[in-house]
Each structure stands twice: as structure tokens, then as C-alpha cells.
Amino acid sequence: MKRIVEIVPARPGWYARWRLGTDATRCYPVTLWALLEENDGGGREVVGVDCVGQWPGEDDDADADFVRYLFQTPDSGVPEDAEPPLAGRERDSGPSRPAVPAA
Image 1: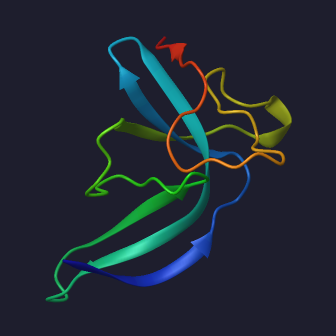
Image 2 (image 1 turned 180 degrees about the vertical axis):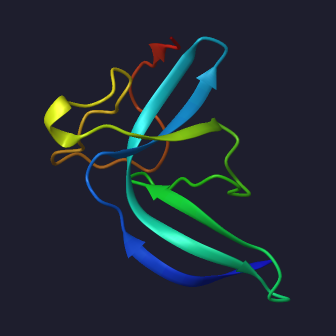
């Protein structure tokens, strides 16, 4: 079991990329970074939590596999497989639109 040591907001431009299937990925903006520590004080790691509440190592994440974090400057646009902003719509979790084939 791990405990949260610190939480900080993520700067715009950070994304978490998830593999949805053999040829499909989806990126979601990272909303915060969490510093996690083993209960025994041993290892530490930083994980990003994306806008739909997913993070690498999440126990119940069966719909997608984490690929990597990526940074794209806000003025250069969003990754081609980025999930459009929620803009007034609600979602329980996970992808709600067709995925873009992996490059």
C-alpha cells in the first residue's frame, strides 16, 4: 500500500497516453501530480492523474494500459489522439469517443 505525500497541480500541456486496444490510443490532460510513498517509507514515485481520474497503477483500470506521459506546449495544440474537453458533458470514466489509431 502507498500513501500520498504531496499533490501539486499539473501545468497545461501534460498528457497521459493510454492504449485502448492493439491499434488505438487516447490522451487525456494530466490535472495533478501526486508523490506516492510506500507505507514503510521505502520507495517513492510520482504519478499523474488525468482529467478522467485515471493513473498508472490504478487497481481497477481494466479498460486501458498506460503508455507514457507526454508534454506538448499549449501553443502547439493538442496531441492528435487527445480527448476533446468535457465542456459541459459528464462522464463516469474512461474513453467515450472512438480512439485514434496508434502511430
